[in-house]
Image 1: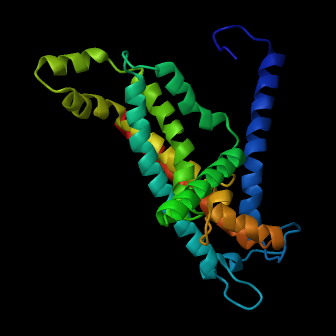
Image 2: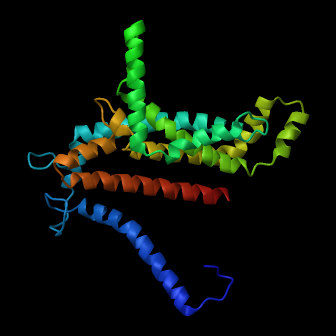
Image 3: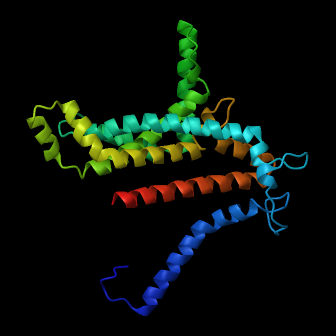
Length: 284
Protein backbone atom coordinates (compact mmCIF):
# COMPACT_ATOMS: atom_id res chain seq x y z
CA UNK A 1 0.00 0.00 0.00
CA UNK A 2 1.38 3.41 -1.05
CA UNK A 3 0.38 5.88 1.66
CA UNK A 4 0.92 8.93 -0.57
CA UNK A 5 -1.82 7.78 -2.97
CA UNK A 6 -5.54 8.02 -2.15
CA UNK A 7 -7.12 4.71 -1.15
CA UNK A 8 -10.71 3.74 -0.47
CA UNK A 9 -11.77 2.84 3.10
CA UNK A 10 -12.54 -0.71 1.98
CA UNK A 11 -9.01 -1.12 0.69
CA UNK A 12 -7.48 0.28 3.90
CA UNK A 13 -9.52 -1.96 6.20
CA UNK A 14 -8.92 -5.01 4.02
CA UNK A 15 -5.19 -4.35 4.02
CA UNK A 16 -5.10 -3.94 7.82
CA UNK A 17 -7.20 -7.07 8.32
CA UNK A 18 -4.86 -9.06 6.09
CA UNK A 19 -1.78 -7.75 7.95
CA UNK A 20 -3.30 -8.65 11.32
CA UNK A 21 -4.25 -12.16 10.16
CA UNK A 22 -0.80 -12.67 8.69
CA UNK A 23 1.01 -11.81 11.91
CA UNK A 24 -1.45 -13.86 13.97
CA UNK A 25 -0.69 -16.81 11.69
CA UNK A 26 3.03 -16.34 12.38
CA UNK A 27 2.81 -15.73 16.12
CA UNK A 28 0.06 -18.13 17.23
CA UNK A 29 2.17 -21.34 17.02
CA UNK A 30 4.83 -19.69 19.20
CA UNK A 31 2.20 -18.57 21.70
CA UNK A 32 0.67 -22.04 21.78
CA UNK A 33 4.06 -23.66 22.43
CA UNK A 34 4.85 -21.14 25.16
CA UNK A 35 1.51 -21.68 26.91
CA UNK A 36 1.64 -25.48 26.74
CA UNK A 37 5.15 -25.44 28.23
CA UNK A 38 3.49 -24.48 31.56
CA UNK A 39 0.48 -26.81 31.28
CA UNK A 40 0.15 -29.31 34.13
CA UNK A 41 -0.57 -32.18 31.76
CA UNK A 42 1.43 -35.20 30.63
CA UNK A 43 0.40 -34.61 27.03
CA UNK A 44 1.26 -31.90 24.52
CA UNK A 45 -2.33 -30.79 24.10
CA UNK A 46 -5.20 -28.88 25.63
CA UNK A 47 -7.25 -28.67 27.83
CA UNK A 48 -5.46 -26.46 30.30
CA UNK A 49 -4.95 -28.32 33.58
CA UNK A 50 -3.20 -25.66 35.61
CA UNK A 51 0.11 -23.86 35.81
CA UNK A 52 3.31 -25.79 36.54
CA UNK A 53 7.07 -25.48 36.21
CA UNK A 54 7.61 -29.25 36.22
CA UNK A 55 8.62 -29.32 32.56
CA UNK A 56 11.53 -27.06 33.42
CA UNK A 57 12.71 -28.20 36.86
CA UNK A 58 11.07 -31.53 37.82
CA UNK A 59 13.26 -34.56 38.46
CA UNK A 60 10.99 -37.41 39.47
CA UNK A 61 10.07 -40.83 38.14
CA UNK A 62 6.92 -39.42 36.56
CA UNK A 63 8.33 -36.21 35.12
CA UNK A 64 11.77 -35.03 34.07
CA UNK A 65 12.17 -31.33 33.37
CA UNK A 66 14.44 -29.70 30.86
CA UNK A 67 17.16 -28.71 33.33
CA UNK A 68 17.24 -32.27 34.72
CA UNK A 69 17.54 -33.90 31.31
CA UNK A 70 21.25 -34.38 30.66
CA UNK A 71 20.63 -35.54 27.10
CA UNK A 72 18.82 -32.33 26.11
CA UNK A 73 21.40 -30.14 27.82
CA UNK A 74 24.20 -31.93 26.00
CA UNK A 75 22.45 -31.63 22.62
CA UNK A 76 22.05 -27.88 23.14
CA UNK A 77 25.75 -27.49 23.90
CA UNK A 78 26.58 -29.53 20.79
CA UNK A 79 24.30 -27.31 18.70
CA UNK A 80 25.90 -24.16 20.12
CA UNK A 81 29.39 -25.52 19.51
CA UNK A 82 28.50 -26.57 15.96
CA UNK A 83 26.84 -23.24 15.21
CA UNK A 84 29.83 -21.29 16.51
CA UNK A 85 32.31 -23.14 14.29
CA UNK A 86 29.99 -22.95 11.28
CA UNK A 87 29.29 -19.25 11.77
CA UNK A 88 32.98 -18.43 12.24
CA UNK A 89 34.13 -20.33 9.16
CA UNK A 90 31.20 -19.10 7.07
CA UNK A 91 31.80 -15.47 8.07
CA UNK A 92 35.48 -15.62 7.13
CA UNK A 93 35.02 -17.45 3.83
CA UNK A 94 31.78 -15.68 2.89
CA UNK A 95 33.28 -12.23 3.49
CA UNK A 96 36.35 -13.08 1.40
CA UNK A 97 34.08 -14.43 -1.36
CA UNK A 98 31.98 -11.24 -1.32
CA UNK A 99 35.14 -9.15 -1.69
CA UNK A 100 36.38 -11.31 -4.56
CA UNK A 101 33.10 -11.20 -6.47
CA UNK A 102 33.09 -7.40 -6.30
CA UNK A 103 36.40 -7.28 -8.16
CA UNK A 104 35.98 -6.19 -11.77
CA UNK A 105 38.82 -8.29 -13.18
CA UNK A 106 37.88 -11.76 -12.03
CA UNK A 107 38.15 -14.68 -14.46
CA UNK A 108 35.09 -16.95 -14.68
CA UNK A 109 33.32 -14.61 -12.25
CA UNK A 110 29.81 -15.40 -13.52
CA UNK A 111 30.27 -19.16 -13.48
CA UNK A 112 31.85 -19.22 -10.03
CA UNK A 113 29.14 -16.94 -8.62
CA UNK A 114 26.48 -19.26 -10.01
CA UNK A 115 28.19 -22.25 -8.39
CA UNK A 116 28.43 -20.36 -5.09
CA UNK A 117 24.65 -19.87 -5.12
CA UNK A 118 23.76 -23.51 -5.84
CA UNK A 119 23.57 -24.54 -2.13
CA UNK A 120 20.63 -22.13 -1.78
CA UNK A 121 18.53 -23.94 -4.39
CA UNK A 122 19.57 -27.53 -3.65
CA UNK A 123 17.27 -29.16 -1.05
CA UNK A 124 18.97 -29.79 2.27
CA UNK A 125 18.19 -33.51 2.06
CA UNK A 126 19.97 -33.83 -1.29
CA UNK A 127 22.89 -31.77 -0.02
CA UNK A 128 23.25 -33.96 3.08
CA UNK A 129 23.07 -37.20 1.12
CA UNK A 130 25.59 -36.00 -1.48
CA UNK A 131 28.07 -34.85 1.18
CA UNK A 132 27.68 -38.14 3.07
CA UNK A 133 28.26 -40.27 -0.03
CA UNK A 134 31.19 -38.16 -1.23
CA UNK A 135 32.93 -38.09 2.15
CA UNK A 136 32.36 -41.81 2.73
CA UNK A 137 33.80 -42.71 -0.67
CA UNK A 138 36.78 -40.39 -0.15
CA UNK A 139 37.40 -41.80 3.32
CA UNK A 140 37.19 -45.37 2.05
CA UNK A 141 39.60 -44.65 -0.81
CA UNK A 142 42.18 -43.05 1.51
CA UNK A 143 41.80 -45.90 3.98
CA UNK A 144 42.24 -48.63 1.35
CA UNK A 145 45.12 -47.09 -0.62
CA UNK A 146 47.08 -45.09 1.95
CA UNK A 147 45.93 -46.43 5.32
CA UNK A 148 44.73 -43.00 6.39
CA UNK A 149 41.77 -43.02 8.77
CA UNK A 150 40.40 -39.47 8.56
CA UNK A 151 37.70 -39.04 11.17
CA UNK A 152 35.82 -36.07 9.71
CA UNK A 153 35.12 -38.00 6.48
CA UNK A 154 32.76 -40.29 8.39
CA UNK A 155 29.55 -39.15 10.14
CA UNK A 156 30.83 -37.03 13.00
CA UNK A 157 30.82 -33.56 14.53
CA UNK A 158 33.26 -32.14 11.98
CA UNK A 159 31.36 -33.57 9.02
CA UNK A 160 28.26 -31.75 10.32
CA UNK A 161 30.31 -28.53 10.51
CA UNK A 162 31.55 -29.08 6.96
CA UNK A 163 28.06 -29.83 5.65
CA UNK A 164 26.44 -26.80 7.27
CA UNK A 165 29.34 -24.57 6.26
CA UNK A 166 28.76 -25.51 2.61
CA UNK A 167 25.50 -23.51 2.50
CA UNK A 168 25.87 -21.08 5.43
CA UNK A 169 28.84 -19.41 3.71
CA UNK A 170 26.56 -18.56 0.79
CA UNK A 171 24.18 -16.66 3.06
CA UNK A 172 27.11 -14.71 4.49
CA UNK A 173 28.40 -13.93 1.00
CA UNK A 174 25.01 -12.58 -0.04
CA UNK A 175 24.53 -10.44 3.07
CA UNK A 176 28.02 -8.97 3.04
CA UNK A 177 27.88 -8.51 -0.74
CA UNK A 178 24.66 -6.48 -0.44
CA UNK A 179 26.37 -4.13 1.98
CA UNK A 180 29.47 -3.99 -0.17
CA UNK A 181 27.49 -2.69 -3.15
CA UNK A 182 26.85 0.51 -1.17
CA UNK A 183 30.55 1.04 -0.51
CA UNK A 184 32.20 4.11 -2.01
CA UNK A 185 35.21 2.83 -3.92
CA UNK A 186 36.83 6.25 -3.85
CA UNK A 187 37.65 5.64 -0.18
CA UNK A 188 39.82 2.67 -1.14
CA UNK A 189 41.39 4.67 -3.94
CA UNK A 190 42.23 7.43 -1.49
CA UNK A 191 43.90 4.93 0.82
CA UNK A 192 45.89 3.48 -2.07
CA UNK A 193 46.99 6.96 -3.14
CA UNK A 194 48.34 7.48 0.38
CA UNK A 195 50.74 4.53 -0.11
CA UNK A 196 48.53 1.96 1.62
CA UNK A 197 48.70 -1.58 0.29
CA UNK A 198 45.65 -3.36 -1.05
CA UNK A 199 45.44 -5.50 2.11
CA UNK A 200 45.75 -2.45 4.36
CA UNK A 201 42.98 -0.62 2.51
CA UNK A 202 40.69 -3.64 2.98
CA UNK A 203 41.52 -4.01 6.69
CA UNK A 204 41.34 -0.33 7.68
CA UNK A 205 38.76 1.03 5.20
CA UNK A 206 36.54 -1.70 3.75
CA UNK A 207 36.14 -4.01 6.75
CA UNK A 208 35.04 -1.22 9.15
CA UNK A 209 32.36 -0.26 6.64
CA UNK A 210 31.26 -3.90 6.38
CA UNK A 211 31.33 -4.55 10.14
CA UNK A 212 27.53 -4.29 10.71
CA UNK A 213 26.87 -6.67 7.81
CA UNK A 214 29.58 -9.07 8.98
CA UNK A 215 28.14 -9.19 12.50
CA UNK A 216 24.63 -9.66 11.14
CA UNK A 217 25.81 -12.39 8.77
CA UNK A 218 27.54 -14.18 11.67
CA UNK A 219 24.28 -14.15 13.65
CA UNK A 220 22.30 -15.41 10.65
CA UNK A 221 24.81 -18.22 10.01
CA UNK A 222 24.71 -19.15 13.71
CA UNK A 223 20.91 -19.38 13.76
CA UNK A 224 20.79 -21.29 10.45
CA UNK A 225 23.28 -23.82 11.78
CA UNK A 226 21.60 -24.08 15.20
CA UNK A 227 18.19 -24.90 13.68
CA UNK A 228 19.31 -26.99 10.70
CA UNK A 229 17.87 -30.48 10.46
CA UNK A 230 17.61 -31.64 6.83
CA UNK A 231 21.35 -31.71 6.17
CA UNK A 232 22.51 -32.50 9.71
CA UNK A 233 20.53 -35.70 10.15
CA UNK A 234 22.57 -37.43 7.41
CA UNK A 235 25.96 -36.30 8.75
CA UNK A 236 25.51 -36.63 12.50
CA UNK A 237 27.58 -39.05 14.51
CA UNK A 238 26.97 -40.33 18.02
CA UNK A 239 26.33 -36.85 19.47
CA UNK A 240 23.09 -35.38 18.05
CA UNK A 241 22.35 -31.69 17.77
CA UNK A 242 19.22 -30.27 19.35
CA UNK A 243 16.93 -30.49 16.25
CA UNK A 244 17.96 -34.11 15.65
CA UNK A 245 17.52 -34.97 19.33
CA UNK A 246 14.06 -33.37 19.42
CA UNK A 247 13.05 -35.26 16.28
CA UNK A 248 14.18 -38.59 17.70
CA UNK A 249 12.25 -37.91 20.91
CA UNK A 250 9.01 -36.75 19.34
CA UNK A 251 9.06 -39.69 16.91
CA UNK A 252 8.66 -42.19 19.75
CA UNK A 253 7.11 -40.13 22.56
CA UNK A 254 6.06 -36.53 23.06
CA UNK A 255 6.04 -34.71 26.39
CA UNK A 256 5.61 -31.01 27.24
CA UNK A 257 9.35 -30.84 27.98
CA UNK A 258 9.75 -30.32 24.23
CA UNK A 259 7.51 -27.28 24.55
CA UNK A 260 9.72 -26.06 27.39
CA UNK A 261 12.78 -26.31 25.15
CA UNK A 262 10.98 -24.46 22.37
CA UNK A 263 9.86 -21.76 24.81
CA UNK A 264 13.42 -21.15 26.01
CA UNK A 265 14.66 -20.91 22.41
CA UNK A 266 11.91 -18.40 21.55
CA UNK A 267 12.80 -16.31 24.62
CA UNK A 268 16.50 -16.40 23.75
CA UNK A 269 15.93 -15.29 20.15
CA UNK A 270 13.46 -12.59 21.21
CA UNK A 271 15.84 -11.15 23.80
CA UNK A 272 18.72 -11.22 21.30
CA UNK A 273 16.56 -9.39 18.72
CA UNK A 274 15.53 -6.74 21.26
CA UNK A 275 19.13 -6.18 22.33
CA UNK A 276 20.20 -5.86 18.70
CA UNK A 277 17.38 -3.37 18.04
CA UNK A 278 18.31 -1.37 21.15
CA UNK A 279 21.98 -1.21 20.18
CA UNK A 280 21.16 -0.15 16.61
CA UNK A 281 18.92 2.63 17.86
CA UNK A 282 21.68 3.87 20.16
CA UNK A 283 24.11 3.94 17.24
CA UNK A 284 21.68 6.02 15.22
